[in-house]
Image 1: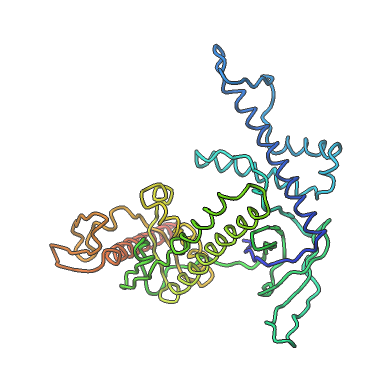
Image 2: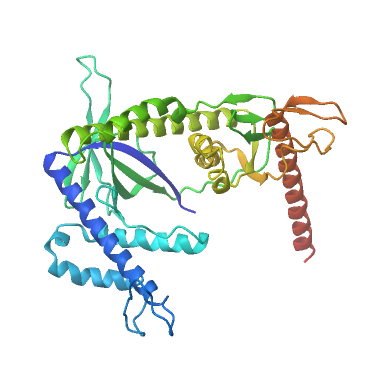
Length: 412
């Protein structure tokens, strides 16, 4: 099994390189929107009933017109490059990746049943990908100037096809045994970044259940409550910055769209949103490492994040980002050799972890008080104990199942 991971580094293109990369983003956006329009026209042409016409518009396509899938659109792109000079300046695989991105969006929609791809407005298409490299594009180590007291930085050069060499800040070294397979060039409010997709032939086995078990319950009042009684406060990064965001957005609404002052304020808002996202992700990594240092097995509840994000507490749910946290926790557990599993979250806050009695309580009740065994503890801690009990039961059931399978295979 190939081990892969992504490292993000800051890059510093010159003026000509930046202009070229911005033009590439625009050409990729054009390809993406055209391919999406082509697919939507084909789909809409099949929606009209035979005995009735639409009152708005009609898509008249031949009945034997094939569906414009990725391969047909890729062949059409090859022909379009001969007639459109703007496409000829872009790396061919970069344009093909725009079609692959659209194809992945349609496949995800078919799997989930919702989320039809939307057209990308100007400035909304923010990245392009070089899908393969024959050799390592990162070369030419340089050291930062430390004589004037500046912070030491490891600088190198990255060479991108048809763009050239540019400075890249390697704040951490590429691990030994890993090679650069792909490079995604990304633009944010703070500048340009290169995401290196690294791969290695090193096999990393899945962690097996071992050590001390730990159950965690995600919440809003406290970000995480563990089965050991620890409550980790919710920092609420978005809520803390909401007043400043409102002030900036109110000022933005008073500016003329497209003016210099409008663009300056829009960039300030984007930088603030990026800062909130960086704070949240850093907090998630720190909490994940903190939890992994305490146990050999971590069990979390399998949340319906889509349903939670549509309720009355949607803003608070999205601010804490439980989906991102569980994904980061899964990765950190794999890296540290900690077993991670998600269990059923149904009625985890309505049962007593000590005697199993049904103790119904609404969301406003934050203390678990069992009338049967008289156990009193925070509601989220009680839920964490229920989760760890379910996780241990699932692990024991899996061990029994594997033992039965081994005995049956030995008897054969």
